[in-house]
Image (cartoon, rainbow, N blue to C red):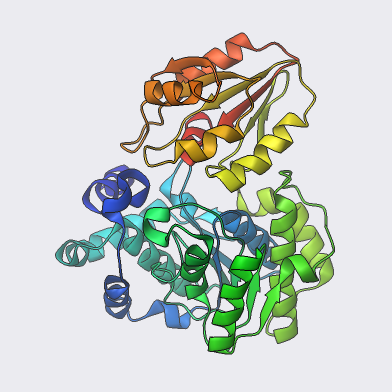
Length: 406
């Protein structure tokens, strides 16, 4: 198989949450342990940091990876979802895994995947862990896919566990209250392994503290202990909290004295995240005159912060290209968007994409008005045609909308 044929097979043959939704979600780690045993347990050979959270886990993971790279360590980075190419999910020192490695891995193990009905994400975790071990990385930054306790990445024993924050997302799987969601994320806390919590509420803090007490894990609340706000090339306002979380995790690494990480490494790592890791879609400017910003924020907590930042910008008129997936709680997120904008409603090109006309109708109930378009590209092109040089165009609502304009 060619690379494209291999990737198409992965997407089509194995359940993939990003495209299929609930039907691809596993309720236990049995298959993951089965795969790990089959691959001779690469997770036991990895030195890693494990990162979970409702929002910010991708940015925090990239911040951490950038710092380790600046310090001269061979750094693996596993994140999800990808924006343009599957290979974005698995990187070493900012370089994506090769097409040939993926082809070889799938060809070698395809019969096992099919016989055991492994999910897309389970297979991806096995691929990443095996690759990092074979390439002898010094450290791997591992981001959870969804949740924590039952996430396929949760077979690692890290140097530090990190939970960025808790908000309402994926409630079908993780629970409908903040403390139930926190309990799922807290499932990555391991016995005697330090844990860093980014942002908390009184409700979620109790959950994390109780879990840490149970596992005898030293716990640090970054929002209470980190006062520095070091500059970074990540320009979203929400990155302030992510930088504090990453810094608190790095302080734990410094205390362990297993890696030589200086404050100069941290400062330069924070300033060179995009260059070092290739991070995309976080308050990313596509062009000027008119200014075009895209962002992958897709739940209420993330969108509130991003919309506040949008409204602080200097512009004449605001245009918003908006698309979402069909399991999104529109009553929750639509009130966040400004009524003063002109909207370009669109459907992301995946099976889970919500029909643009349904989105337009629902949005009108919140006084959000505009046109509906059958594709992201058509919506974006029309926004560019309608905007003058003093205007501001925001593109978002879903990772998959952003992916189509990059």
